[in-house]
Image 1 (tube, rainbow, N blue to C red):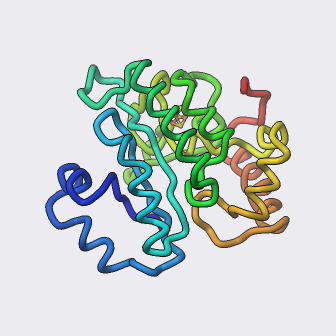
Image 2 (image 1 turned 60 degrees about the vertical axis):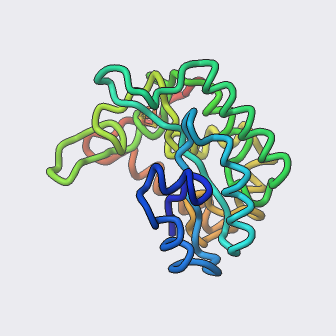
Length: 215
Ligand code: SF4
């Protein structure tokens, strides 16, 4: 179960609305099924450690992050130019070193965020099938997402074949952290289910056969 928190009370409520921070904690504190989802931008990334500590304090399962991903429709004040992306990724690595069990992103996922341009090399966009509520095909969660400036958690979660390049992390995901999407199923049964779903999505109408992707 995901809840969105983008910083401490002041920063979160400036982004999500007044009173949201306290309402989230009042409703979910102590629920270890909850994963905090934080969207990082140049404005709030220094709040990451605060949010991870908050997760510990309130006994949540941990924290995952998206980087703000713009649309292909012109500049946006929240876009992450290369120096800002580098600073965000450095902060992710620093906090991961301090709280490896609470910041649920793997090193491979942080490496994905270090690279902005994933055009033509995204398992999530290339090999999974997406529809909006009107059954229109689209490439990602967001219509017209800018794959040249990607920060999507879904994209950072590699296919099983790509995970094989990182055996130590794969083992950690299966046995220690569990499914980074927050599902409880762990162990080899969870891994096998993930592989089967990935294969199945490749053969759905409009899906594409698995192909080798650039790391
Ligand atoms: S996760 Fe979405 S935005 Fe990112 S590269 Fe893949 S399809 Fe594009």
